Each structure stands twice: as structure tokens, then as C-alpha cells.
Amino acid sequence: MNLTFIGTGYVGLVSGVCFSEIGNQVTCVDKDLGKIEMLNNGEVPIYEPGLKELIDKNKGLGRLRFTNELTEAVHRADVVFIAVGTPSLPNGEANLEFIEQVAQDIALAMNGYKVVVTKSTVPVGTNDKIKAIISQLTSHPFDVVSIPEFLREGSAVKDTLHPDRIIIGSDSEQAARMLVELHHPLTDQIMVTEVRSAEMIKYASNAFLATKISFINEIANICEKVGADVTHVAQGMGYDKRIGSSFLQAGIGYGGSCFPKDTHALIQIAGNVDYEFKLLKSVVEVNQGQRFNVIAKLKHSLGDLKGKVIGIWGLAFKPDTDDVREAPALDIISALLEAGAVVKAYDPIAMENFRKVFEGDETVEWAGSAMDAAENCDALCLLTDWAEFKNVQLSELRQIMNQPVLIDGRNVFTKEQINQAEFQYYSIGRPQVG
Ligand code: NAD
Image (tube, rainbow, N blue to C red; front, side, top):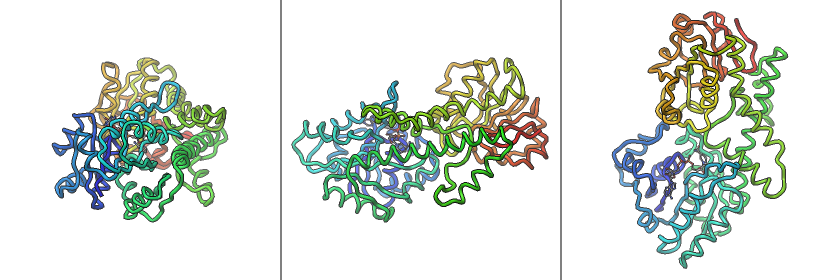
């Protein structure tokens, strides 16, 4: 099929590339000229394992193109995917400005029947709005379908080529049939439902996963006080098939461009129909507090943080991505600077993105390697569980630090490793060592 993706970010780019990989003709459109130029010059604007290889291959085979010419790309398409951002407004509601703009642009570019698919995460009822916008501006026939995206940054290519399920929310049988056919090479687990349920499935799924994380983090906080080990507790819970073991890793909480924004948006969606989503409000509150456990543990070990040199390992909100949106590191580093600490930060991939956010802040020292960041530190905080950090020789690390204090925000190291290296070690929900 001829497919056009509008919005060439994490979702639009990865989805577009993967659909070209399974034999479709794909055009990815973005209004950001810099992004399109990079892609046309063989560079990839985001870090995602396996993505560059697939881009090179499918561009070479003539199945994948990048452009900022939306009209021409819509003309050529049987299916037009909307994959632009839906960031939070200050009140937590999803900002639909980009979605509405793209709906208008598509309508004005139409030259015949099109299926318009919303992949962006949008509040219930948004696809009806998109339909209304398009029908006001064109007389060409079209259908609007909701296919929410579930890929995870860091494993986006794998998730897109081998999804757990595809949800197709459609009021049109013809459009649903086309989209089932398009997705069949990826999975047999395809559910066709009505549009509003599809929209809700996305928010409910993210809210549930966020709830699991905040739940285990609260259990971790209690474990610390009663002398239990949350990793064992989670393992024991996870053997129960009704519970499952995923999303039960205690730590400093979730971040990223989806969970924080989508939980806030669902609270607002509920609020708009006079329903107070109390459980989800608590999930958000617990998550926000959890990241500051790092500061509490530092103060417990070092006392006043003024003038103390603190190393930070990991700035991305999770490993294998360069995305720093809503990363715990943003709040933690701000709190450290506010307390008068000197911060030395390192991330294998996300340094540049993070630096943009902290631009002009002279007090952060950007280290060239993990060891550089740790050198002469009074304490080291591991905030993202990159494989690189797990493989560090702790005995060597101890020797280059001022004081052997390690705050492991992701429970990466074992008690045995820590005992051998003689660190004073704090993790999340596990007994303190040293
Ligand atoms: P992103 O910010 O990485 O990319 C969005 C792109 O859209 C940007 O490149 C921007 O320039 C482009 N854009 C905006 N307006 C445009 C316009 N009028 N014309 C052309 N291009 C335009 O966003 P993302 O992370 O890919 O997220 C997109 C949507 O998918 C969001 O609703 C998000 O919630 C959802 N989602 C994201 C993920 C994820 O892991 N990132 C996972 C599932 C769902």
C-alpha cells in the first residue's frame, strides 16, 4: 500500500520505516526541515536500536522517502497516518493544536478516498473532531480510524515489527478491512473495535502500567522500613500469572514522553465528565515523590549537600534512548543544584539532549565517560540502568571517588558486588549496605 506518515518523530519515523520494511511504499512528512534534511542525508535524528540499518536498506530499495511536502505526500497515499505530538497543556489536558492543524492540512490536500489513521495518543472523542474538521474542508470521501501506538522507546523497532496486539478503532468496515490487511504481516492479534474504545484502550493501558510502577515503588518504600527486599517481593509476586512480573521493578519512578503526560490527560478526561480518578491521582503523586528518594538518601549519607560533588550516571528516562522528556534526572539535578551541590553528569547517548534543557547552567559539569563523572565525587547516583554502568568494575570505581557512596536508583548492583567493593550503598526498597 501507499502510506504517508505525518510527524516523523519516535512514532512516525519508526512506524513508517517498519511498514516500508514489510513491503509498503512509505512517505514520512515533517514540518521540521532540519529533521527531513538529516534523514535525506543518511543521518537519524533519534537514537533507536536497529533503526538506521532499516532506514538505509529501505531508502536504498526505493520504498522510503522523507519530505516536508505534505500535499504531494497525501496525494500519493491510500492511508495517511497522523503521528504528531500531543504534549500536555499546563492543566494536564492533551494539547491538540498539532493534531487539528494536520487534520486541516490533510483535508485541503485530499484528491480522492483516503483512510486517515490517528496514531498519536488522543483523548476520547478526538477522532470525531478530526472527522468534523476534515469534512468541513473537503468533499472527497474519507474514513477516520484510531490505531493507538504501544511501542516503547529503546525497543521501538522490535515492538513495531512484533507488537503484542494491534487495536483498530473504526466505524467503517471498509477501512477496518484495509487496515487489518496492512497489519497482518506483523501479528494475528488484531482487535477491531469502535473508535472511542480504541482511544480509551491506549490511556487505560498506560495508566495501568504506571499504576504497577507506583504500586511496587510504594511497596519498596515500606520494604526499606521493615527490612524486606523489594526485588525478592516483586519476584515472588510475579510468579502469580494474574499479576505477572513486568513493570514490577522498583526504582526512582517512571518518566518519558508518555506515562506522565497520558496519566495527567486521563485524569483530565475523567474530570471533564465529573469523575475524580482518585487512584490515578495517587499514582502520579507517588511517582513524583519517588525521584526525590535519591536526594533523601544522599542527605542521609552526606548531611548538607552544599559544596558536595555528586556524580550522575544516566540522564535519559530509561536505557537505550536519547529521550530526556520528563526524565527523573531533570528534577534530581535541579534539586541538587538548589541544595548547592556540584553536579558531574554523564549519559552514553542522551547528553546532548539533556544539555539543551540545562543550557547556560554553569554548575553542571558534563563528563566524557562514566569514570570521568565519578572521579573525585562524594557520592555517585545511578539514575538510568544503561548496560554500560552494570559492567563497571566497582573496585576501580571506589578508588577514584572521594567517598565510596553509591545511590543506585535502579537496583542494578547485587549485595555481593557491593560488599566486595566496600561501598556505602543505598538502593530502592532493599537494605542499605555498608
Ligand atoms: P515527537 O515529538 O517525537 O514527534 C512528533 C513530530 O511531529 C515532530 O517531529 C514534529 O516536528 C512533527 N509535527 C508536528 N506538527 C506537524 C505538522 N503540522 N506537520 C508535520 N509534522 C508535524 O513525538 P512522538 O514521541 O513520536 O509522539 C507522537 C505521538 O505518539 C504522541 O501523541 C505520543 O503520545 C504518542 N506515542 C508516543 C510514544 C513514544 O514512545 N514516543 C509511544 C506511543 C505513543
